[in-house]
Length: 209
Image (cartoon, rainbow, N blue to C red):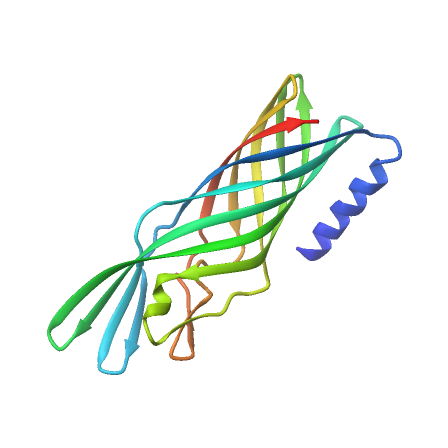
């Protein structure tokens, strides 16, 4: 993935010498969803289960540049991304079942590099995206055995379509990830994850300067 990002970045810069260049700002909303059986944890005499409660929403905002050449275009972006995820923690202890709801917020710097084709106002595109972890907050830290161990970076891919109308750039994209969702969860020194990667649908509005 790093080699692919590097190659696409070289392609972008090599096109600067003879391509048509535009820059702008863009932002939007995303919906994160995951279907999973949850995480089951043996914690001493107690059994725990952490479930992904429901679809969560986030937002992103940043800058993009686009170089068009030879019927194609390359579009790298730098986006601040914030997502909120809702969890349900169920604790089975001494014949009791206690259920609590928690949420976590994640902040990352997203670096997508899209390659696309354009026909009139319509575009199709796809490419890799890197997520650089910035910070997070979690209600789960109130649970004494819980720790967060985020990777510095994770990687995925996007594919979507868009429309260019005057100076507006309208996009809808699907994003998949190459790592299992929740792999930052650490309980009593043991790492866990939901066993599946989560996907996102992103809606974005851009404005050409």
